Length: 237
Image (cartoon, rainbow, N blue to C red; front, side):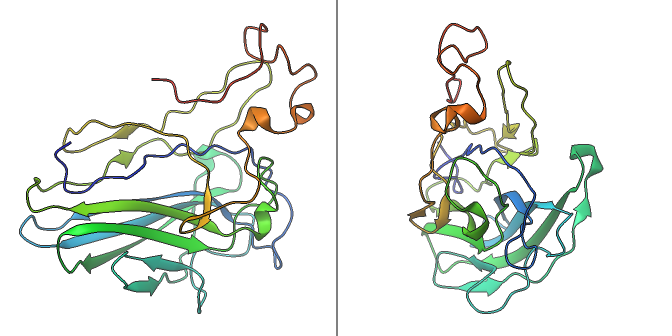
């Protein structure tokens, strides 16, 4: 792969969401998110980094804005910034009470190397069924930037399809993130356990079929779409 910027993982971490309830002061507003990185000039180490989140517009809490150790964008080189409070853009085309918010910043890295760029904020949605206590679990996303002087100037992949879906019982559920690389590099996908902070996985995560099957199936053993075996959860090549 020739890119000077690449993901260490391109993730599909799917969860079943129920967006009612409250995190302290009705702060359950983050549904999903992603980080993209664009190199400004192939002769420099300056990049534009954009954090995009999908929000619950029924919450009074906005993306970003808290001081201290919250709402932090880290660049992986020891530098970080507080993401300012950012209003929602309603997306009724995606469903009721769904919106997006994004923040972009330009950052210059000190030189070649690998940098894990991450964003964390405490307000994950309440009611995620395949992990413990989601409403009190920090929301966290990351991507890895590789700056290599021997590789061509390049950009991270772009995800074109929002990670907002609804599934129906009795039929297979598919999600394709619509990923493409603007420089034509090949992409691969991997399912991973969600994180609540750098190198810290969420508590008691389970793939959806491993979660209590009584929540989704009257008869779990033949629960797949064909009715001849249990459901599965995987990346389809």
